[in-house]
Image 1 (cartoon, helix red, strand yellow):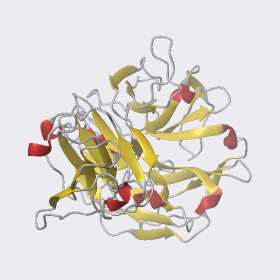
Image 2 (cartoon, one colour):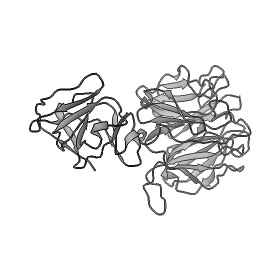
Image 3 (tube, one colour):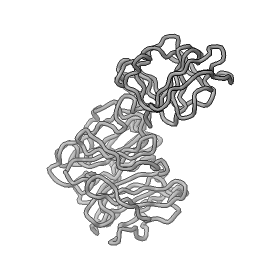
Image 4 (tube, one colour):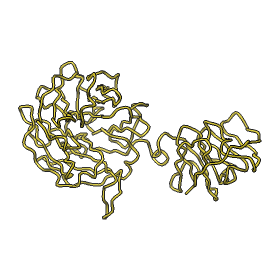
Length: 407
């Protein structure tokens, strides 16, 4: 493990090679320090204490050439994460270190010089894998009306990374960027069907700083159009904002949310103009005991969308069936416990290819494998049953770590 420590201010005497983004400096060993690295650069030295010759770059370098295995101390003065690899060409399997930007005077040293390539990225997971997770879906025999942003009958996933970017995964193990920045300013992301009345699935987001609710219309290709305001304020008073599907039976997707102050559950019906209508009370109280709501679609065959809710105190998962009167029926237990080990719930329709809505989850650090907790970032999938119950969970992929939300 490389060590980080501070060095005093000193003066660098040397000559930088300009023009390529790379430079070598012959430093006077007695006076060199990490302060000699200019802002915007990654700098490395042949000595352990920012002494000896200095090399610098502000671009990714797949092969350090004559500097291969020569760097014994370094500092990252860029605004990006620097992936410091022991192999050339950014190969992570031989070992790497994800170096966050350093403050002036900080230094990372190692007595053994092993660095062979350096790559600048926005998030730590990009040192070893794509910024988006691996997601694969079977083709559903029917279009369920939600979970499919590009109309190919495969369940899609939208992922927010730690840098605040948004990624679209269409179910074929690929991904592409659909939101370049700023999405960390949203404290809720949800989607379930078409709100804007154009036949394409949309995304709804709450802006944390203002409590406003925004509709981002889907384009039918997995991308998002220009946002529209559908809630002018006050939405910070609501928790578990969840796009739900058409509970009212008017052919328009609806939204549900829990009022924090009262624990009441409210339904916000979709309208013909793509906005939200006057809210309707569908849960008189006690809903603050639930710390996750999942709009599952019609899982019990009743013709209306159904709700999964996780009970915080017990980790149980409950099914609340939608009814023909636009309310929720008597709840039914579908998960006896252990659901508090899930950080995220993804209701994206049918990904198993049998025509029934399925559930995917991402684990938190309480998830247990072989008797040991601490296994966060596992994708666990649950195939839907015709009764509204779920098949046993299957661990699908352990590389859903380092991300910041899904819908």
